[in-house]
Length: 124
Length: 124
DNA sequence: TAACTGTACTATTTGTGTTAGTACAGTTAT
DNA sequence: ATAACTGTACTAACACAAATAGTACAGTTA
Image (cartoon, each protein chain N blue to C red):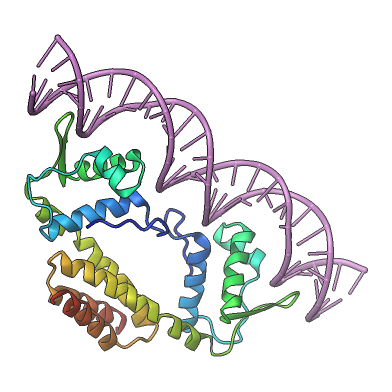
């Protein structure tokens, strides 16, 4: 489940966004399922409610969740697919690091095997 | 040569560190070669001298450069090799992103080809 | 109606990066 | 010895963003 690293360079609200998106993609959270309320999640994670709210706002804005005043927040339909489309930017991220390592003289095969290794770990 | 992006999330001093390390690894800066002075580089990049100093301190602490009061800063011996060793953490970084994408259902081949593409771009 | 939801504010605190300025100490060349 | 350059070590101030704290309001549900 969602874990927050308070010392990461990544802002907490961003970690929450990514954590929830990951839970949706991996099926831990299903479409139409209700999320914990802002206050509830705030207490659970030991984070200020406003920080949770900021994360939920972003998820709502991107159509990943649907939030209704008084009703609660729910995973949107086709949320997983929307997230996957968004993930293509991460591929660019990998490309950038790879370029850096390429310039630094790291062998291409070393990266390839790192990728295969990561996939192998998941597939079990 | 070194270019600074003032709007990056990455701090300027960190960009300088990475930029100099890249120049060392690519051979633009050679071992024992003298770097521009702090004040000189400060004027060149339009950054505060303290910011340059912070970058140089880190490079010095890591044994990438050797700085002597009154003498100047020089690329350390075996600097390129030390940097390469340090770069192995970036491979872990790639692995982490790959795991994330794997869980998200992105095909393994998509990442592999991204890596190959990055290397192809460099090799020209 | 009561108890829950999300929403919308303002104010404050905190941390970090950056800038600014000054002073000091060692090296080098003249 | 002197001048002009080096790096080093401070303190202070500023800017910005993230995070916290607190309050109030509005809609939903049982």
